[in-house]
Image 1 (cartoon, rainbow, N blue to C red):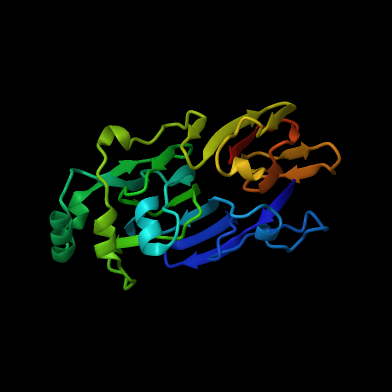
Image 2: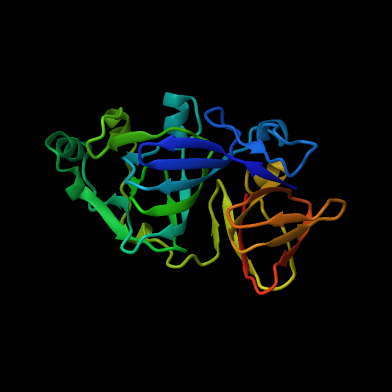
Length: 284
């Protein structure tokens, strides 16, 4: 096991920390906590291709209104996997919201007209979110993170984003491709888990939240996702501090927002610090 060091991408609206990435657009590193591998690219240490990308996103301002293609469209037009993703809300200002889908099943012509005449905001579905919520975003879903939110994002290993609208900022838009891939889903299918129930699984990734107030153990042995089949999973520390133990290795001290890569066959001892609750997310 070892900690990762993120690739940091500064944006006009905040920043992204790519904590687990073997994607050429931003490569994570092995942290200096393991002197034998310190500074090596994650892509040189774990089997390739690693099919998920994990980020911490700090949105000080609202991101663009965007949509991602599914695998079929992305393979043809971008020679890339598509992008289904999910968010776990690490922190949010009071009254925080996200754009999560469309209010109705609008035609491409209706959406294009709204973009042309500046009325797209009236078509967007905004929903309130709070710290601890979980949001699943299938490819094709129109979405945006609004300002005042910090979140953990788990996604397919793709960097394909089609911007539809950017709140007046002079960045490139991808309207025609975006209109190609938009998929309407009804409100009942686009509802944040408030709070996160603790487990989420799709064909691309699995997340499982664990909380320890005393010594315990964990393992990725029951993960069967594409990432798990590489032999590696990820632990993200949500809150608290403590120590991880694994046979044959030195204990590893951990704190909030550390990211640790773990071999799936390993069984870890989890030891929270005294009078501390240690909360972590298993991702693979």
